[in-house]
Each structure stands twice: as structure tokens, then as C-alpha cells.
Length: 97
Image 1 (cartoon, rainbow, N blue to C red):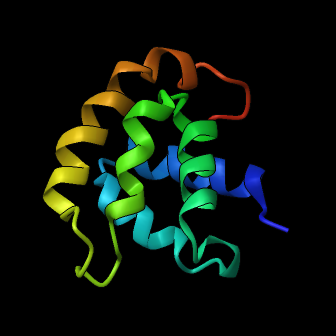
Image 2: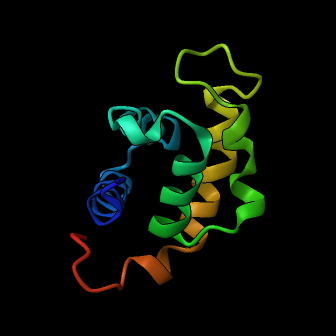
């Protein structure tokens, strides 16, 4: 089972450190459960409360760079979306930031 609480904490911590969304997606690929798109979308949704409409492009991204969506596009789209919801997720109990 995907350790969602651990992953949410990891993503939030990395975001607070300034890690790019594409880099955070690569970190998640270390979890066997995150080899497909759905767990990645679910993790980003839970961690950052970003609307699913913003997260859909994760499906076209690939950690090896061969996907139709580039790292730059992931970062250009998701970074502002994550920052826009920061006031929601940065205040949750147990958040490291």
C-alpha cells in the first residue's frame, strides 16, 4: 500500500525547500506504488490540494524525459498551482514548514 501520510509529508517538505514539481515527481518514483500516473496525481492532490484539472498533465509526463509533457511544462504549471494553495496546506498540523 502507498504510504500516503509519509509521501504527503515528503512532498510538503520538498516544496518548502524549493524543490521543483518535476523533481518531486521523480522522488515519488522511488516508491514501487508510484510507477503509474494515478498514485502520483493522488499524492500531489493530497499534499497540495491542487485541483485535478491542474494535475491531469502528470499523465503525459515521464521521469525518463520521453513523455509528451516536459519537466519545464510540469514546473510552469504545477509550481504556481502549489503556491496558490500554500495557505491551505502550509497550516495543517504536522507540517514541517
